[in-house]
Image 1 (spheres, rainbow, N blue to C red):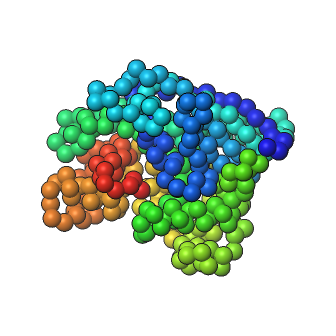
Image 2: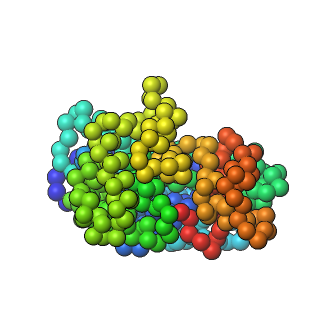
Image 3: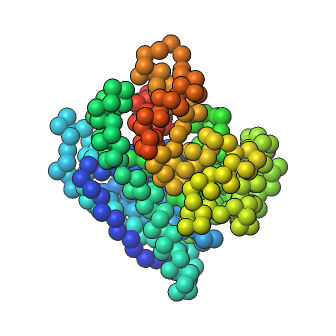
Length: 331
């Protein structure tokens, strides 16, 4: 590995932590271009490449897990690790190049946020579980999978681009297009792992390159438009006292090619926002159809009405509905 700045981060994992949710989300791309899940010294390891603040970064996360929290049925995950466990996640951050004191401090904050997202630690599932435990519709799902996690993308920009890529296509095709974007716009970390690109990287890609690699013209235009706005500072994705989630949502909706579903999905995967209404999501409607035992999916208006009872925790309602479709992959 070339000269790099390294530092360590540690995160406590509460009893009942669902490691499998995290590992499954980050190994959806079977070619493992920018994320790798493997074993290191008998413990699961997650490696993620991402550009943070313009710097190629490798996040190497090792899980030190207590094994006493085994399910009654003995079900275990990979490498004998229980499906739920307590312990610690230890992350070594490898940033390419030497960083000054201020740049190192900024990167430490960005890496901390990214790892929190990756580990699904931003949104506490307990309030929704308490709300829906006795609910006639979602109560059985909550009791079957207590502690279900919302795993996020490493950065808000990654979540937004993933949401745009996934518009109106199936999951396998979306993963293939995401892989293409990483190969075209991403940068390779000195470890060899590709890094998910930042706004400046995507903004520099030519639209014709994307179209030549199976992106529709509309999708390519939206990705480039979004990247250029973020890179220029015209679109501020940072939540602050003067830039609320509501203001960011309104700014995103003003971008051509971005609609309510894309915004809500990005709020879920990018910010861990607790009350996203994904009534426009086809998988959510399919899950409700199955639970209601009806012949057709509920329409958008009825789906929105059904989900309204779970406010202000509609994000976790969506997570449980996705998980109920066990024969399908989560979007």
